[in-house]
Image (tube, rainbow, N blue to C red):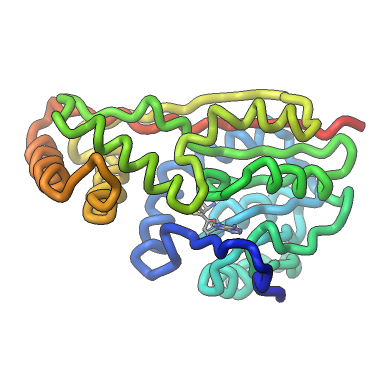
Length: 275
Ligand SMILES: C[S@@+](CC[C@H](N)C(=O)[O-])C[C@H]1O[C@@H](n2cnc3c(N)ncnc32)[C@H](O)[C@@H]1O
């Protein structure tokens, strides 16, 4: 297993792999795995396919992909904690041992023209230079192979009633991802990026979830954003005072049953490498 020893500016993954983040990912997966499974159904993932998953995290979809192909699935996962867990848990289904590259995607020694499917959910929004990462994945796809990415198109994100601080909060959210070269709303840019690296676009499908206080959607977004609110206060024009006011507004909206959260859209973006 190779670690990143390159001379490039060191990329830091913004959310880490602490136990709290692992638990958050598991809860989030419960809400969103059905959407990913529908994508896998549409892709008609079949027995015998060679599949690579980028950034599987807690691995719920990794296990699903293994079941569908009836064998091992490869992974690139930079977190030592998450990749160790994947290595331990995934072979328990008796379907074999996949290759796990515990490294940044950019440094993974992927085979050439090998995969029928490469899949990534909520990884590309963190990555600097997504075009370079995509070119790497296209090289690893077989001719006729498919790249399927699920990622955010954040422009739909809203809290109703709308707090006064919302515009500056959204700017801080954008700046948070940009601080490591990422784009929190990468989903909408993917079709154009796919074309630039020679993929033929096959589909773009959006899922927008909404929820009132107490719903899984409300809890999912509140848990994530209230957890990050203090870090967001480091990104002007959002300020510490605004962060405190927004937190207060958010918590009081949580007690009002007519409040509504409209989540960032998740886009499924599928492209095929020409034969
Ligand atoms: C938000 S989590 C999503 C996890 C999982 N895909 C899911 O949908 O629940 C992002 C994952 O990508 C991994 N990751 C982030 N940057 C990466 C990189 N450059 N190379 C490989 N993995 C990366 C993180 O360690 C984490 O497991």
